[in-house]
Image (cartoon, rainbow, N blue to C red; front, side):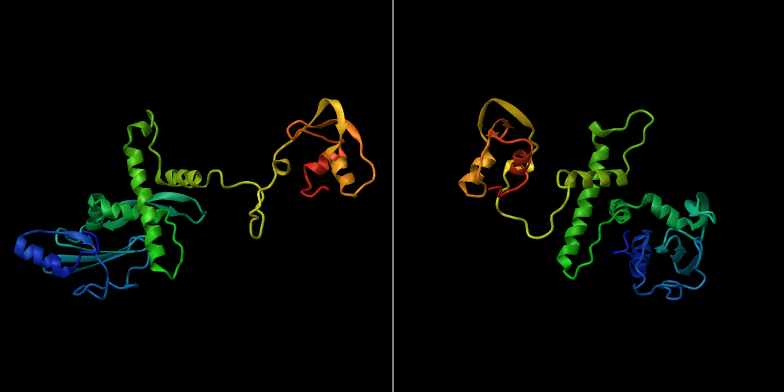
Amino acid sequence: MDNYFTSPTLFTDLFQHFNTAACGTVRINRRELPKDIMKKNPEGVINRGDMQFRQKDAVAAVVWKDKKNVNLISSIHDFSVGAVQRNVQQADGIFQRQEIPCPQMISDYTQYMGGVDRADQYIQYYVFQHKTLKWPKRIFFTMIEMLKFDAFRLFLASPHHQPGPGKRPTTFLKFSKAVAAGLIAGYTGGSVRKGRPSLVPVDDRLTQRHLPGSFGNKSWCHVCHMRVKNNQQETRRQTKFGCLDCGKHLCLPECFTVFHSVKNYC
């Protein structure tokens, strides 16, 4: 069972009246739990692999130290101890695979637990948590993580995404990175301007790449002509060069550069 349902009262009632045994993780604030071990920092549970057992009638309780404390009760198991494989960091900083003592009830629970616990486990690996005072936002981001995990399971089940011979299936981490890259594609790169964005559209001549070319016939330079017209300079020149994309005759290189870099050039 998930820890939402697990309690000593329920397990005892199931065992005595319905001949049904059960096993599940448990919240430490449930009633009738052994409070000496079902607490935040129980005595004797310090290092990885440490454990403490308690028994009352048909229900056994255990707390086991992995990366954090794992609390579980069961009316199926006794105090049997097995082992699990974990990556443990050595003194030189290198991780090595080691066997860690583990209660058999926790080992069996991990092997046979259902979809809800498995989904919660995967979601916690690469969860996106934003601290917020508004609880609807927390629910929204949790639902996004659930949708991502559902998509990952469908991706693995799809016949179009099966790995080739000798290859491993896509991991949840790679899938999460691919989803993130797909969501931000086209919205990154380049410099970001600070401040409020302008609502006025920018001319193509200022944003696109333009190259000079020859028209074959001479005509007045557009920049010179407009500057003379607005009394910003006295003379204007003719040229056969300019920008073919813009269709403007422009003196090279001064007027060509000004026309494609200055918004108010005249």
